[in-house]
Image (cartoon, rainbow, N blue to C red; front, side, top):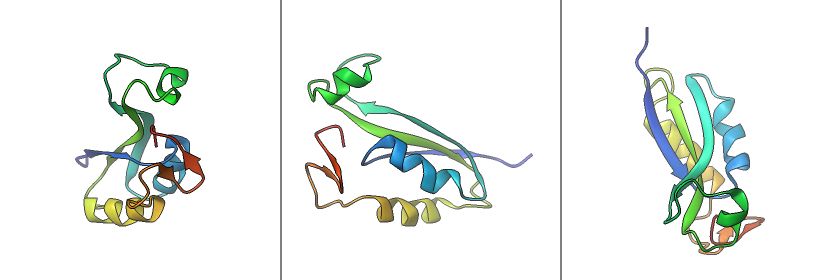
Length: 96
């Protein structure tokens, strides 16, 4: 059995962040959720209010022998704009 590792990336709508990773060989699972914040188990509506401090994120379980972490980073940087403090592309708001 191959070993797996996990990486968590925030940036943009988590639904939009799933597909680019999910389609790659060596990606075992991509799970959407929230990272950071002050509220335990926030709802989508609470996070969208901008008051919880959470960001939408994906956690990726991957086989580094098939799809190394460096390739994850390359794909991640294609999905976000690190110079945009208010969101990602069409996604606007503090949770992005």
